Image 1 (cartoon, rainbow, N blue to C red):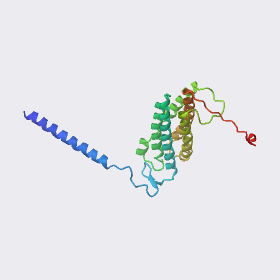
Image 2 (spheres, one colour; image 1 turned 120 degrees about the vertical axis):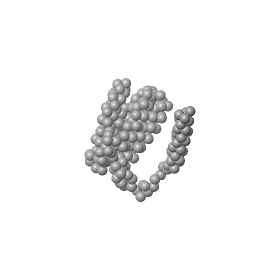
Image 3 (cartoon, rainbow, N blue to C red; image 1 turned 180 degrees about the horizontal axis):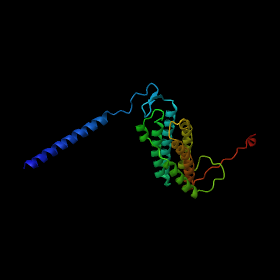
Length: 223
C-alpha cells in the first residue's frame, strides 16, 4: 500500500512539474519579440559575435542570399501549381541556402573552432546540383539561340531567381577571395545559377510553354 501511495505521489508531483514547465515555456514564448533594437544604429552581429556595419560585404551577401531564397520559394509555389516535379529540389535548395547563410555569417577572421564546426559546408551540395542539371538536360532540346526570361509563370520566376543568384554570387566572390568563407559556398552559388537556368527551361518544356527567342530589333524600319 505504501509503495502504491508513493508511486501515486510521484506521479502527481511529476504531472505538476510538467504543467509548471509547460507554463514557463508558454510564458517565455509570449514574451519573445521579433525586434531587438540592437541594429538601430546601423550595425549588426555576425555569428562570431563581431559587430559590423550593415552595409558590410558580409551583410550584403546575407541579404542577397535571403532574397534568393525568397525568390526560390515564390518560384516553388508557381511550380507547385504547374505540377512540374521540381518541388523537392527547390525546397532542398532553400534549406541549403540557410547553410550558405550560416557560413557567410561566420567570417574566418573572427571565427573560433567551435563556430567553424557548426557551419561546415559540404561539397556534396555542388555534386547534387550537377546531377539534377544533367538529368534535366537529357530531356531538354539543345539550346541553339539566346532565350529571353519567359515560358510561363514558373519558368519566368525561376529565371528571376537565377538573376538574383548571380547578384548574390557577385557579393560572395570577394569574401571567398579574401578567405573569409568556405570556397565551396561560392562554387554552390555559381552552380545554382546554372541549375535555375536549366530548371526554368525544364518547367517551360513540361508546361508546353513557348520560350521567347532573342532577336535584334531593326530600328531602321521605324524611320
